[in-house]
Amino acid sequence: MSVNCPYCSDSSSAGSETRTVIRFGSFVRKSDGVRVPRYRCRRCKCSFSAATLDVCVHQNKRQVNDPVRDLLCSNVSQRRIAKIIKIDRKTVVRKLLFLATQAEQRLEAINSSTAKPDKVMFDDLITIEHTKCKPLAVTVIVQDKTRRILGLEVAKIPASGKLAAVARTKYGHRKDERRASRARLFTRLQATVAERAVIKTDQEPHYPACVQKFFPNCEHRTYAGAKSAVVGQGELKRKVHDPLFSINHTLAMLRANINRLNRRTWCTTKRPDRLRAHLLVYAVYHNDELLKKPVN
Image (cartoon, rainbow, N blue to C red; front, side):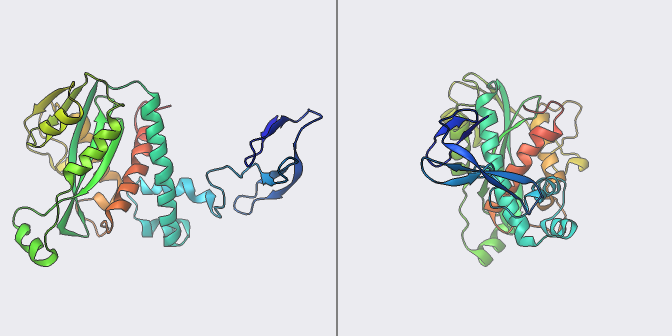
């Protein structure tokens, strides 16, 4: 077996007489009880272990990564996760941020390695930041039929309707960041979507200009909105055939599986960046675990 030195990139076969990387004992990892071999490089005099380049290096509780991920994507709050697994709430937050970093890399890798979809849908899911006076918009784009989530972004938006005046009085002017948020999302996905793909949306007036700017060769199809069904909480539609079923069903699953997105809940988002992290973790879990044909 060939072992590479992570510091000087030197390598040699275990059976070679001139090998520079040699065995240098072992240790038992405290977190999971696994015995990890250590090595030493004769060239740079540095020692390292088989876990030096592991993404979980220096984590004292790597054994809770998978349970935290599963519970985060199963409508369980962070406080309850800490109580169930018997860890501190700060540990749950650190695991969320770690899992989000890995999930974003996984999402980009899958998008670049799989075939470019020729039919996609996107829409905004509206949620709140601590109070209804501070709403957020989550732009989600999915592949038609398969419902694979390709990407998402979170943006702050001003309150509308009867709460608009109240929100301005209590919190001042709130900038609408949806245009910049969609620009970041579609810039990343320009190389992911097929050049002449069909993009389906509802009749939101801002969507056509956005599609024309970032996907000029794609065909944009819009559909009139329908009355929502109670079970979908605004996402699933009360009709026999829903042309936007893939995106509506995905948004309904987001509300069902992420506690902070529930319509009636004590658990609300305090920071938009943490909501984005949670959504990234769920996106990969959705694609790999919940779909009928997981992405390889």
